[in-house]
Length: 326
Image (cartoon, rainbow, N blue to C red; front, top):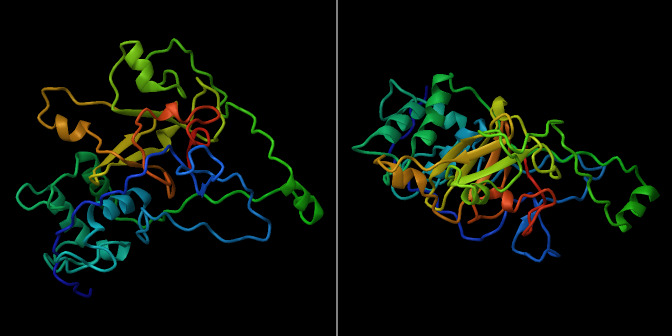
């Protein structure tokens, strides 16, 4: 195996640019009262277009699963990118990079050495030492699972079934019909239910604040489509769907999506010495939904963490509707 340059981890966290707005898709709606907010395009793909969508700019690690690619990009990319910077001597971006023999310790792969440095209290990577357990677990679980190859791409837009020729041209002149609101899961939750499956689609943080419920730092619901009613169960996340929140300091929180589609981040007990670091989300933040080898990411950045206040049945504040799984 070819020896790579000495592995030096001097990565600094990726700092995201500030631009408030709700979850978005792939195109900017210039007619929106919030023109700085990008919203999911409703323009159907034409039949003669077979191009795949561009891969996520956050998760561009070739050959890596989405969550691993996002971790490496945010934690290491500012120094160990395609062109190493700030004293870094090597690139850490792709499956080949991570599975290669480490020049620092030939008995280990670059990924294994990276993991050790992420855990180190003496010489952490990145030097700021701000990676949380959720972030480190992503890399450790991937290594323990055999460092298998993966891919990460946004979901491909469905083909248009509007036909071709004159019929398709005529359709372009007509305003699109409102999308019907459908509970795709077919399960409407009892609004009086308690626990993690309660009230999907509703504004979790504001509701809990008014009803003296448990405190959330961030919360919301993921759905399979954009238009779904309140109290309808969303995407069953037990298949591994997760929401990743990457804050302005490059810290990533991994929020699992449960069987009702709900996700949340609770503040740790006050007595917990790690409380300030793990509870605070530096704003603005960026969010992505990951499922298997697909990713749907927020176009801009956001400061509101009560996600369902914008991601309502029809959308508010420029949001196109619900948070939609890829």
